[in-house]
Length: 147
Image (cartoon, rainbow, N blue to C red; front, side, top):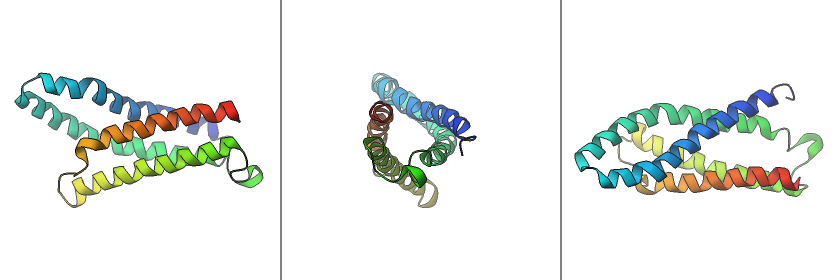
């Protein structure tokens, strides 16, 4: 695993930048923009972005989760033990938050692809996921400061 770790880390970081970057752009720029332009235009832009989002975001999120899972083995289990120090506890919290995001993504995709219905959480989904992702990023940095 030590050989694969640097590769998994780079892949993980690129996927995180793509995933969180999209959420930030949507929250900071697109949502206020949609309030300023005519509804016909905003609806058309949302349709186009929705198609791109459903093609790009699920694979990038899947790779983000898988690469993160690969990296966890460096810090949990085996000689390292489980939740024996603050860094491992923070990693556990990160894993729980990532699982929450995974549940929201699976719910959203199943509503779209399987049930063919609008997501009832659509309005709140991206702000919730963005907040969870930002907390995960803060925990990641904190993990390496505390050990």
